[in-house]
Length: 370
Image (cartoon, one colour):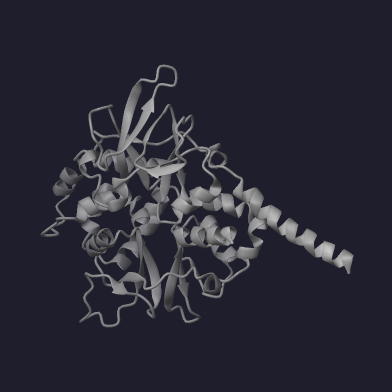
């Protein structure tokens, strides 16, 4: 009896030790192998910025200006300074995302004329004039290197997709939005970086990863999407209005009568594709204007394979799961396929909801707290 009780106690202690080791980890361990920060100057054109996004295979990057030259779209005071003298070299004024660029291109296009010279004019504007088209680019987050994984997860579980980490910060704040921060160098930490880290500690999280999406309450609904007859320009405008980086493409109930210019409730509809700002990153600027009036399915079928190959990757497959799938399966799919969301469907391929990186991080953090 005593041996059995001691054995149970030891098993419980062992189960508690594993997550504790994970909770003791710090943000600096996540960025130790990250490359130097990729950024663009505030004077860069949108064309140059888009080329930089493609070349570096990123969907967002900070915009830098000379110190004191710009107050910043969100009033941020994130500075890069000389490590030895402390003099400020640059000021990060905001973030530019692929959705910002697409929203600028599609935003006030009244006649959809397909005029390529008009597109050249749009892409010639400075990047600083486009910051803030979408809410995410208005704020810069920083995370202190000594921030705990739990606090990092709290930030990313609230829909923050990325944060700057100063490598030699002397600030006491562990996390915060638009902090006054000065450092000689930064690294970008993303939700995907955190997901890879968590996947590398699967044994510590087995008790939560074995549970289903339904059981964890990880599914998000209602889920808004576009129909297969929605034009690219309308999809971009809808994504901007809803602050969505991607939407599911669902079959139209009635192509002749349904309003394809607005988001629709996708639940219960046949899922046939994904329309994402990330996928448009590889589209040549010269082709963008002509594709604005095409349907999202025409774009994904005809151009995505070409643009993806140009960007150095293969066409993205539709990544799905079901409500009774274990969380481990979903974590594996997002990391392996490098996607930021998994569509949840029933056995007939009807859309039931979605699970994003934000949702995954949220339920894992909640389980760790328990």
